[in-house]
Length: 178
Length: 178
DNA sequence: TGTAGCATGTAAGCCGTTACATGATTGA
DNA sequence: TCAATCATGTAACGGCTTACATGCTACA
Image 1 (cartoon, chains in turn red, orange, purple, yellow):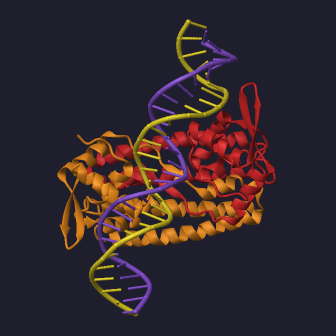
Image 2 (cartoon, chains in turn red, orange, blue, cyan; image 1 turned 60 degrees about the horizontal axis):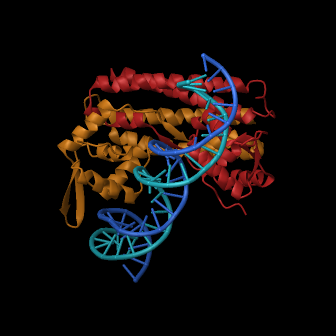
Image 3 (cartoon, protein in one colour; image 1 turned 30 degrees about the horizontal axis):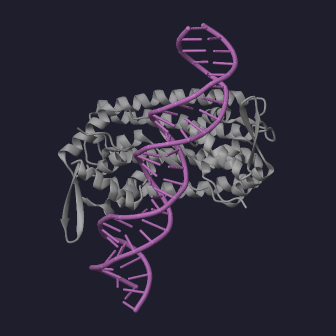
């Protein structure tokens, strides 16, 4: 039955479980607005190739109209996702944090260089938080337990806490460096 | 001069700035004990190939003795690292969090399945925290400002805060799900 | 005596990115 | 009319992993 797929492929398939039918282009937009905070937003070209793969396995169906192709998840797709969720362990998260990596070897540069990097990162975190806050707001109205966007809302709250905590931690580090 | 390298290559080079000379095998162990919390711990085979690359660019020198080859950073290596730190922007962190991704589509499975996944993740976080705590303890004695392991200690504290905060957030999510 | 750790690599292959290419539609 | 957005791909390539291979040393 369903051989396993790269996680990104399951992720894209998962974005099709919210009741609508999307083009590759739209799926990429959805990935940009949600997936990128906890996973990665795959390149446009990868979205198309994953859709081709999912389609070849019968996990999505393609519908063509006016030169655009929309994709919908199939029953087999939903089943594959469900068994993936139920039967494979999640595995630990991977954090690739260039700021932490650079601070690790901060002895090579001046305190000011390190502090500047951290301050810039706080600004980037503020941007990230603002973007995520917008996503969170968009879910209001359907985010109660049992409603369509309950889980996305939980994850968005998680993300807000995550990036907010990181902001606090960085501000603390700046104080310790100065 | 120094073309740029993949970040992992800079990371490994950075691990050689703490005053000693390591074999590929030992470098991998150092990566496992520090780098993996904020970046990735490259596969053994990649450590060797990165060392070959760094060596071919004159950023490290190899010394052979008793069938083991140790590597030391060169002045050119230190210079390349410093300009990298000073002149290229850090870029934002990438988080690949399978637990968050799975929770996003948690509507496909039961509350119990979601809660179990989160509980398992808390256990994994505890392991991670314990390992990082050990690393942090090993730095005591040379972690004051100006001392050799000041920056690694700062980053370790960051990591402890990071994973500790995540633990709290997950416990909160479990409460909201139940 | 055999297993675990030390030590060093090669080869194949996948995931994912960037660069390249094309064309329609909409709005300034 | 020109730029931005929508829409869909192909090709090349790099980074990184897994699997495969080899051999030595220390220890239970």
